[in-house]
Image (cartoon, rainbow, N blue to C red; front, side, top):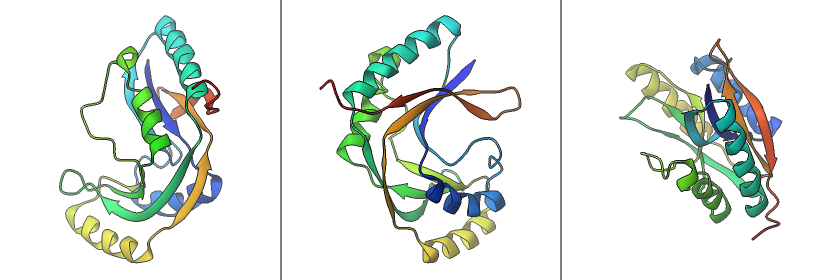
Length: 172
């Protein structure tokens, strides 16, 4: 089965992201707005129990982190994806690094760019037009995220929560 790890922002920020996603993101109905903390991976029933146990330990080591969405940005020219840029900070980067320890297969192939996707799979002309509009509209939103979620992918392509881990930073 396919699993992933994400943090969900507040309903307020989800509503802002969804106001764009419902028009510009074909994955709108598959998952709520989120920050991907670990790319999708395969695991069986036995493996995922061990993964969940390790994530519970990570949650005790790591502190809640500040989410500060500061602007609309793009992954162009690699993909025509638009997103709210989330400013990296020490607590967020520490959580990401902990989720990519040797236990989890090491660091990912791509650099970690914390973000919340608001549009994807756009044509070049759509991307150019919408990016210009959204850059002017902008975003400046701050909140604290105190949990992350282990998700699994259903047969219809949607994602749902397998387990939730509260960040406490109790065991440093």
